[in-house]
Length: 267
Image (cartoon, rainbow, N blue to C red; front, side):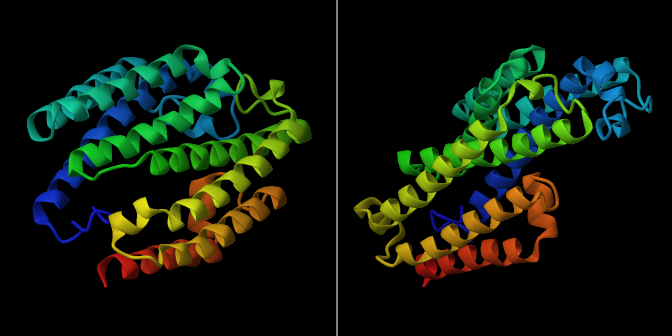
């Protein structure tokens, strides 16, 4: 909505909200299913042991019923109010994550790629629901950024395992910290370079009606450097959500990027 200049369209906002609710319900059903599968492992996890199923607040039977209700409610919302294309993306996301929960998450690197592809599917679903055209540039950028964020979290988990011998996830002992660090450097560089190239492209200038989109690259560069620094310092852990909520500078960088981008698009 924001990028296709439909931010003030009531119909587009309604579709966006419905898509968000629909996707959230299906996503929640996946999380319920995953917690059912991992309940024994989660009981011994330093953090996950506080989840409702792991601490015994709800039973497996109730969790299954919640997962089923969430799944079919989400699918129904998407089917009746959005489109069949949206449902296809939703089902693809569901199948991908069920496969992840059933064992694919134990495979090194593939687990990172599957999580990252899930973010791409979220973007695709939003684009379809709000009829926002998505370029290959955007899809590649989202995929690379998702891989970067996920690897950053894996890095923190590896160091936690090395420091405390706490098994955060079953395959964490198979990751190599040097490989992760080198991968992070490469992906961070790719994200910055591709964003700069895209901001100067005819495609970006045509889509957003401005030849100054490249100015927003400064926020991307500073944001990547800041996030990388927090990862290396292990500040607030490498959880993207915690970093965004707890680091004031990251919040200012994201806000600056949104305001700058919005100015060039709408004014």
